[in-house]
Amino acid sequence: MSKRVIAMSLAGTAVLGAAGAVAFAAQASEAKPQVRDGEAAYVAPHGTRDGSLTFTVRVSDDSGVRGVKVLAWPGTLKPAPTAKEMKDVESATCTAAGDGAARCTYTVRVTEADAVPAGAWHVAVLATAKDGDTAFVPRAADFTARR
Image 1: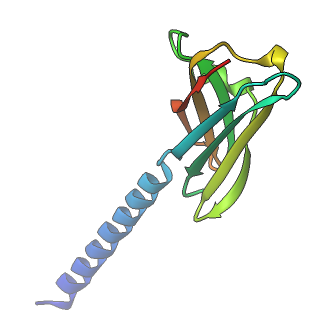
Image 2: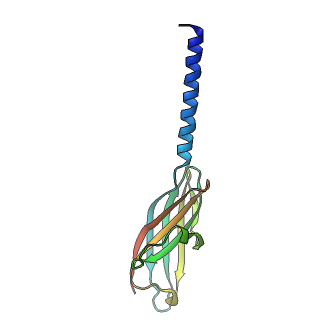
Image 3: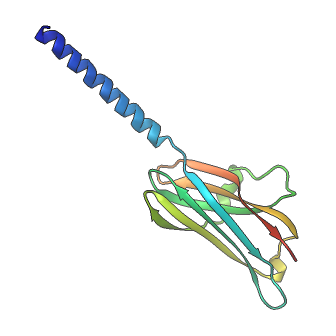
């Protein structure tokens, strides 16, 4: 085999390898944040004691987690909230959990005046990664409010 054919083969292999690496990197960075393990706990206020709503979730993205928005909504609401409606709701507090993951917690005090109606409720989440990608999960967790 001539040196010219070998050189062209090696050059072609290098080009294909570089193109594959670029495609892999582009695909990896297109991944949306992952929202997992959502849990909600509602404690109704009673007498002079305030109640609370606490929601925790694990969010991960290869670029890291910028923020998480949280909205509790009644199961009777149809349709469910949308990602667009989540832009102006309250944020959870996130703590780094390694490898681009964060453990995020949202807690709010619930007074007798703020108590939610009894019944099924859901928690919607809008997670934003540091690279700007978002993931919307309309039912990241469920809870039942009792009075």
